[in-house]
Length: 175
Image 1 (cartoon, rainbow, N blue to C red):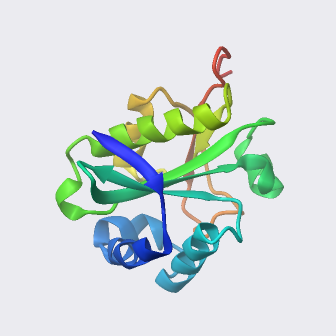
Image 2: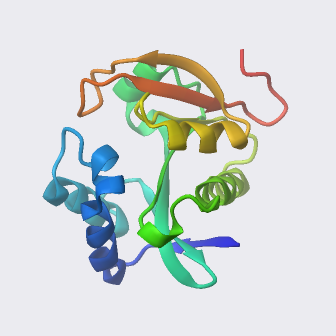
């Protein structure tokens, strides 16, 4: 069972190791760098950015992380992704190589959505993995997210197309 807890500065060493793993670097460092990603994570952990960073644990053992943020905090990105007022964006990764391919990503996203909806009842949730990231797309679809569009986005650090997914606000339809 995957549980989530707030990320702490002491977690940055393991996150740095995960970001360097080929299965994570391929997606998280596309158009970025290890240093830039760690700086962003550090800024969020210390509260300098309005992003909620969480460690994902399997039987109390760190296996990855998730994050959530109000889409409206980045209006340019929110407009480009088609976020609605009150929507929350999420990102996630299974960093521990031995934990990949075991269904933990699906459980991590379910836990992340549950936590987000506890904090922001009824919100819609959006995610935009790279279109070629089949594993991430399957995780979202297993959690009820619906594909909205595939397109390159100016606000993303890569020119590769993104797959924009949305989990409708509780009680609302996706369309």
